[in-house]
Amino acid sequence: MDKIKVHDKFFNVFISEEMIASRIDELSKQINDDLAGKDLLFIGILNGSFLFAADLFRKIDMDARISFLKLSSYEGTESTGFVRRLIGLNESVKGKTVVVIEDIVDTGKTLEGIITDLRDKEVEGIRVATLLLKPEAYKGDYKVDYVGFEIPNNFVVGFGLDYNGLGRNLRSIYTLSK
Ligand code: 5GP
Image (cartoon, rainbow, N blue to C red; front, side, top):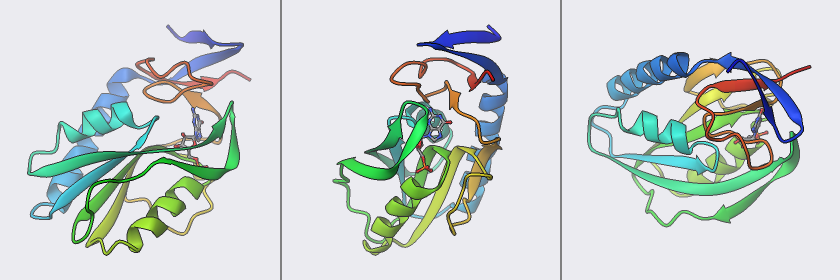
């Protein structure tokens, strides 16, 4: 399906299921090479990253842990500009190399909050993997380590990303029709 409707809005296919799978394969290879020998903890940021986190994590071929944090700063198709911490981290992060897994980095506010928090917790190192990055919107200083796709500043759904609760189960990524 090239054109779909979610709630009241139409979306066009933008990144296919096959492109997503092959890019995740490449990212996992880089991570396996770069982080070999580290005490690794992946932290998936819910809800949006759950599919990306699952697909990436299953391709990590060394000892590694995974945990999830639930945050949200979006309502509808606009960022509300603040980050709410909904479910905290139970796992001990001290001495670990943490790989934060994001679905999408937009303004970077969410990421900034997470990185600030982790730096206070004596982690050994922090890496960030995001499936999508919107360079035009990104205002953060942190250089995102692993980026699936750089995309224009348009609202997208699918592969974990929602529009008001729907669209997460779409296998490709779709962009809002203009
Ligand atoms: P930031 O804090 O970087 O502005 O926003 C990051 C969060 O906003 C993401 O984790 C995601 O939940 C949400 N977000 C940002 N852009 C989009 C988008 O285009 N589509 C959807 N569905 N969510 C987005």
